[in-house]
Image (cartoon, rainbow, N blue to C red; front, side, top):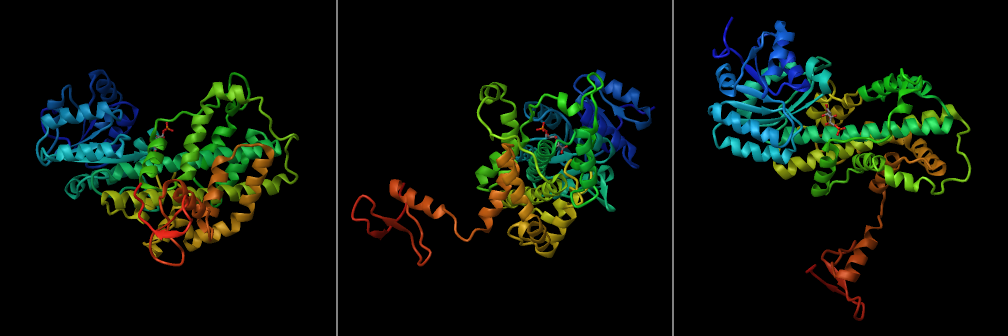
Length: 485
Ligand code: 6PG
């Protein structure tokens, strides 16, 4: 048997918790790959290697040994907790790697950290590639969607390796070189933001149907199963049916009724919104999803507010089948808004950071392996292929038509939610965004007037060039002005 000292592996994995182990097993299962593995505590390495002799892993007890076991240019994927643990491993790898080698961070790093790390590592001559990997534990094992950033040089070596393990959708691997430095991680971050919005919309749809029609979770599971055969077909719709159908073994009740209704979050959704705020991009669907999770997780406030008045009468719908169809359409329309907003953020990020991100390619690599994989992504690719300069995804002909078909139902659902006292923040904010975007005139004109009144912030006019200020505390004539505040 070869020892770890021989440079025999073409790829390495550092960090062998579930995601790292599964990714290492996936790599090892593809022809042509020999995988070096390393974990801070050797016990985990030992367990992985002994449980999977078929993988032919090359284990190491130290990072020096790990580096020695890799062929040049060395390439190693770090799968450790985002933040300080990632920095620690990078620093250690830099010590044992050489110029031309490649360090890949496959964790959910904040893209600005990736930009910083890439810059620092580049100075040593080593390539640093931040890559988004989506698909959870199963995706890592069987084929994730992979969103690598980093240099073109690194992509030459990494491309074939990552392609070998990526999911395949309609014959195409779900991986592409997204752009330099933080581009991969920003795209993964926004993917997860959209995942938040998708899940919130699904939750609102379920809640409205349940409370409006009195259907049981199992009956609603049937509805989602049905929806999954149409334009909403997606992984999240599919697993919603599975979760709703699950019965708790201990109590015999639907599992969804015994799960505490406080949603957790690791922070990626919040990053997506924070970044969007910095870029000036309204991602209201994603923001509402993040806030809805925060609200759910405030038990003291919720308990204190639980006696506040709601609608006087119990709310039910007259035509349950019609209502379910309305909710389906509202869900589809709101989903279009969430994706349109997410792609706006990708475009703005690319512009700000100088990345050449191909929007159609991103939609393509999200078609398989990742959490938001959906039939619908083909339509996004088509939209950008037809018009790469599309200013808002929701205005592409296919989506315009879909929104036109859904719009009356969307309004009925939001009205029903308001009348029934049922929170539907993502449905209603998506509709408000849609109405805002399509409006001929917005009250932003009044906002400008108010800003000028109290702060002399000036305004522009619809009928002539220039910047103006009204002498509000004087004779109220208008002068040309400059915002000096
Ligand atoms: C994925 C997921 C995954 C995880 C997110 C969100 O694409 O595989 O996005 O990365 O679900 O980190 O997790 P939270 O819901 O805990 O924030």
